[in-house]
Image (cartoon, rainbow, N blue to C red):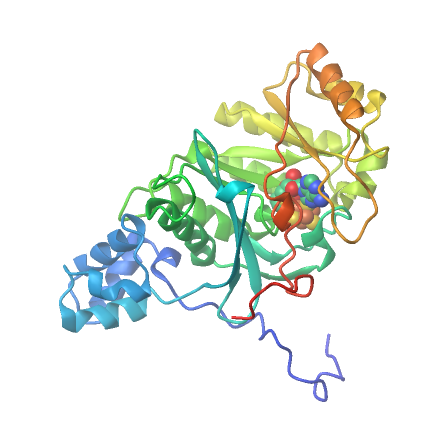
Length: 381
Ligand code: SAH
Ligand code: SF4
């Protein structure tokens, strides 16, 4: 479709989505990185060296002088070709006594995305974005409200994780240096709507250096709104990542409203794909359920949910609804929440209520909305 007003319209602030982020080693296979090094007149193994600097030491473009095994004359060329700057921090906010930290990043084309790093006594988790915005339109989610701007590249996803690992290893979060253990794709975007890119990112995150970061695939969680064909494809990759399915209602009537994509793939189909995933991978599926006061927290719905999950390899993750600007819905009252949990457990369904990490800085689930317009404190760096 042609837009006749386009010629006279002012230039958009965000450049065309057809312009790709700079090529980065995390977009390439080890072989492709080596070929690139050779095309620069360098020996192939230089690609492995620079990959190790990035994945094992978390060095970035600014740290070229620390890459002492690369000849001085080659460093800048290699760094420029394989390690361009992809994401620049615009704003960093902390809460929970310094255990939670949200970073607002600006990409090469000006789009803004967020990632959230959370430290717990036994693990450290980074919540990453897979898209700038999201096109799925769930009405209770701040990210969904702005629509989709663009897919992130593989390296833009990986770089959020490497940055988190760097922050932890360098002891920049409260509690001293530690390692990154978990990654959750629960930031901005629907990861399975950016399928090939996310799969490539999973391979890099779980591949040992120089391929990638060497995290255990089991400690990586991909959360989906329920794109059934993509869940099946994910099962077929053989990557034993944890699958989280955002259900939020046991019946199609309500789920059609809360998760509009349900009209395409209704509850029964989504769960069938989830059970197939559990069967193929042997992994317990996490069923995400945001408890919304007087919307989906009725005792009958707890019973209906229990009926759907009985005997399945599943765990229910109840998320007290996080406040967003667009809707007046609130989290369930504590009593209703407790009753919901009790009814699930009574039927033998494992259920836990997620903590409310990051709420104070709008960094909790569903609160990410990096359009910059809703915060006066974002240093426009
Ligand atoms: N698009 C994916 C992953 C990103 S959203 C998905 O929907 O699964 C991550 C999780 O946050 C999902 O379970 C989503 O349903 C939930 N969520 C979105 N908005 C929320 C809110 N306002 N309160 C609580 N959880 C929310
Ligand atoms: Fe997109 Fe997930 Fe938000 Fe729905 S809940 S709009 S799928 S990010």
